[in-house]
Each structure stands twice: as C-alpha cells, then as structure tokens.
Image (cartoon, rainbow, N blue to C red; front, side, top):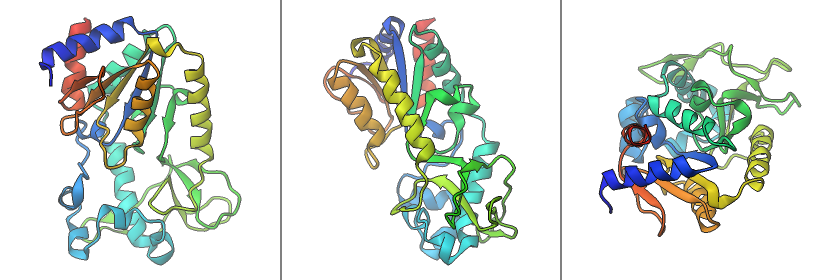
Length: 277
C-alpha cells in the first residue's frame, strides 16, 4: 500500500484533470456522519440492543415479511432509521464531493447503495443521484393498490426505545389506507417498487454513454465486499478506462492502476481537498 500522502496527491491530480466525476458510496460513507456501523451482527446489536435479546440480526429484520407478520416490529426498525437519517447531518465530505463534481466540465453523478438520502441533503441534484437499493424517504403501499410511491416527508413514527416497537398510527397508503412500507429493496423482496431506481439508472447510463471514460474519475467511499454492487461498478468502469479512487479503511484492496486510500471518507476527502487547493 502506498504512502497516504502520495495517494492523496495522485487522487487530487486525477480529479483536477477529469472531465467528469462519478461518486460511488456504500454504508461506510455515513459512518463519519455519526450513523451506526452495521458491519456484522455485533455492530448491529451495539446500535440496537433490544434486537440482540430477540436474537434478530440486520438480515433478519430487513425482511419484508415483518410488514405482514408484525408491522409494529417492522416499523420499529425502519421508523427509528427514518428519524435517525433525518436528524443526522451529512459530514463535510459530501459537500467536497459536490464541489468537485460541479467543477468538472461534464459534471458529476452519484451511485449509492445507501438509503439515507444524504447526497440530496448535501445539495446533489435529484436527477444526478442513483440509489440502487431505494430510499427510506419514499413509501409504497403494501397492498399493491396501484398508488405510485410517494415522499415520506410527512411521515412520523413513534418508537419505544426499550422494545424497538412502533406504536399506532403506523404510516398508511393515502390511496387505500393500507399499511405503507419504505421504498427500500429488502432481502428476498419481491414487492419492492423499483420504478424510481430504474429511472435513476437510466439517467446514469445515459450520462456515462456520453463520456470519454478515460477522462472519468470514480471516487468510491465506504463500499465493502459483503454487498459488492458499488465496488463492482467502479471496477467495471476502471477496466474500461476510468480512474478508480477507492477510499475504505477496512477493505482498501483495489485493482492494478487504482488509487487505494485506507482511511474513512471524511478524513480522506479532506486530505484530497487540501491537496487540490
């Protein structure tokens, strides 16, 4: 692994010379904002002790069946996350990425597996963000009444912190009154409405198709190997000529030719920004 200072310098030089910037981000991007690290069952249970006593892991709870079997449990988990993401401010690295993107001739785009909506909160244009797993800020009907997913802006969920169960009233579909659920792709999820994400993906493909990939820089932050969707996109683009900058404190290993920075997103982006300045 090269010296971090050399990696920061090479990353800054690549960004300064780029025509376009693709920001790709996984769960590690939000850790520096103060969001919990769900890495492994122990990390999840540190954030949510009541679920340890129930023997339920993140994978167990991120299952759409709970909206049928135990809606109060389902909305206890997702309601707490909804308010946590609302109440947490994105760290300064988001603004740095937005500034770098806006300075590129062809602009920038975001591809993220995060559902927190923090890139839009940080000022990225909605039409330049692709959320491959959906967003907690969108709701959909569990009854499939035909209502298109809607914004969760007015939704509020009261959660008992001792039991992590939600209390009535739970979010409901404004069309038919049935129980609502987050517009997030869960594990084994056959009912997620992918229409918004599909439109985002189409815009991303169109943007990429107009670029000279040799002049594209991919800045990947906090994307691990457990769910490798984000890492795979950056690596595919690197094989096609793009420059990949991988920022990851735990899994910085990167393909030949990539720039690997074994740090968290906030300090790494601050160091690159200082070099750019």
